[in-house]
Length: 162
Image 1: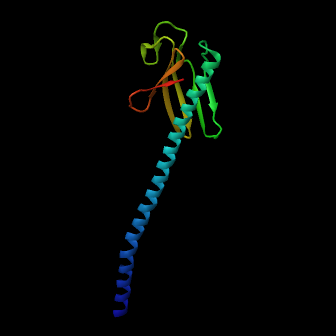
Image 2: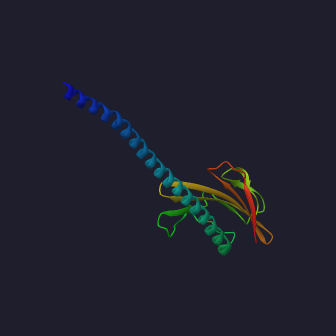
Image 3: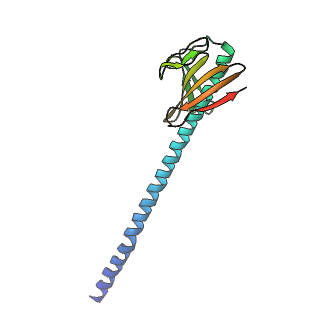
């Protein structure tokens, strides 16, 4: 009997060390998986935001080249990285560069001032989508851009481009 009690004690000792070890290993693997998922989601969201910013620059170039009458239906451009793209159109966006009074825009009545464009650009990357809304106002020899992020609750940022 003495021999079998040693085996039983050895089995209990092995189980006491193995069970917590397996539990810690499982928890560590879950944390690593969650961290990787969070990192990839963040990367997709940032790439989508940068794609939306690229769309704003692209639209500015088109407005400068084609003038106040530029109102395309839908523009979608795939970016060189192969994962990201941006899209905008003058359905939700409003071009009032040729106007002398405020007009209605996506935010309500008389929200797009004269000589302005309310531009909404959607950037996509992977499963992420970010929207950027800018109001571009022609002022003498400069362009005033008011930027508000549709997803973030932040104060508008104003900057002048010469």
